[in-house]
Length: 456
Image 1 (cartoon, rainbow, N blue to C red):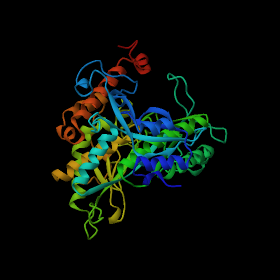
Image 2: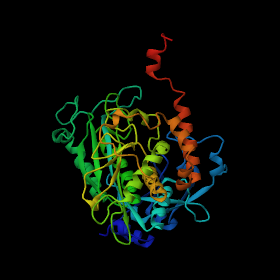
Image 3: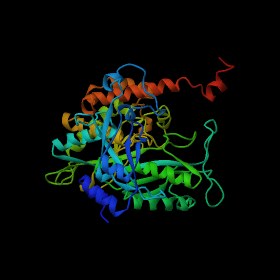
Image 4: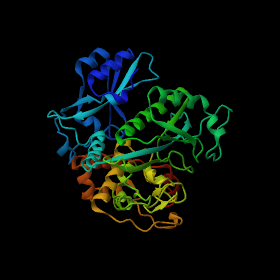
């Protein structure tokens, strides 16, 4: 049977569905939070419609499903709530491994009635940024590392999360970084995850146990940013489903458990010259190129202003603390895990930059668009980086926003990012995140009741 990655047309997709005797199709579109929105169609209806319609606001809602009541949001999205046209991308077709009947899932792109991509849809934003590189004869290559926690089922949001029970009958109570036995505690779950990934042709590589109790990390093989963003989107959905089937939760919250490290989505990135196939980050003699330094310079210059895009929730900023395996600034260094921008040990042809700032809670399309946009601005404007950090970057001052409200202010004041990512996207994104921030500020936490109620 043919792989969906090589499908080029709707007719190719039809043949692929026929080979697998698919009876239902999940038509998916990732929204701002990375949630899968869309419709489930009978196969005949999917073939007849060759796409579907959804309201414009479906890809532009808060994590609680809300939209602003007024304001700049409606300068972009028409207040009449018009439809957008969704068209399937044949290369994203995958079988749904856990469905009882043969079911496919296909990611769609969003278009307006004139046939233009909806500029604030996350997949559109990443397509646009990749197009900027293509116009320069370049192609970005990325490889994400995605961390997540397994927890015991928790149906009460007022109850603290705890590690799940493994096959030994006990839950983890200590740090088990890189422990093989700790991973083997959950063999049945991970066997199902790998089986699902194989059936879905996901590009997954290594599974390791991370530092936190019940914290895991999956690495992806390097590939084109849009293809890998699709795979991370599908992988998150798969892991959550598999965990539920094994009576536990999988969470990609940046900081789900107090006292444990947060979860990141580190993105390794390099740039290839399409004409020569050469890694732009290395000179012919194997030394680091000017482009390598300019790319780092762009990350250092623009990441602080772009933080709201990759630390998208109030919880995200709890992860970014000293000595917690998460950066507090945008220093850079070779093989230095205390910095925000790391260059791993690698041969010249594999020289790359690792962005360690991004949280696991970030939308993968937005995260990849953000880091590539910052690097692009560095290349175009030939921005020189700061001197390499050779010591402990945690001894340096904070250089990132400390809260979502502050991060949104920084993002609104950076016109270069608006230009590269699109004014419409920035408007929709900041308006939605402002709404989420306002909703959170209405909640009174246990800490406030414990320490302020009788003492202030």
